Image 1: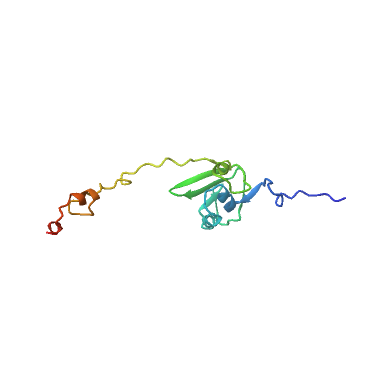
Image 2: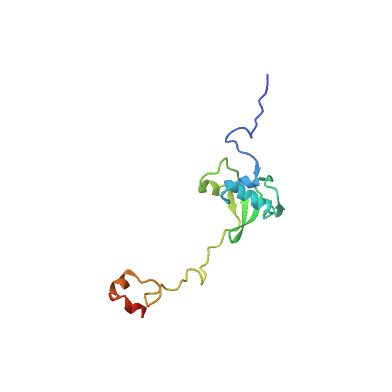
Length: 143
């Protein structure tokens, strides 16, 4: 009589106790591709429990704290679990707890503060209304 051993790696849908850090970051939707996640790890920009790592194959477990730069701020994430696939955003958000949620973006003074569109005063392109109001003799504008 042979006993069957349960192998969690080959069983589809089985919960694992650890996962590669690049794969987890991709599953949790922090990076668009697994290659980008692996590149961040290889460059030493990601910390696991305040220790810099440089290998994407580093295994992480539930309860680990990841610290990494994302966009214009530093993310501090606690790993809660592992997914079996890279699913929709609500499924991905269940994999982690955000220990330092990103602050709402503040509107900078120089952002979206464009000068008003110039009306046709001899500079820029005239609008359709300006062209209708122009005199028919084209020579007067160039003089």
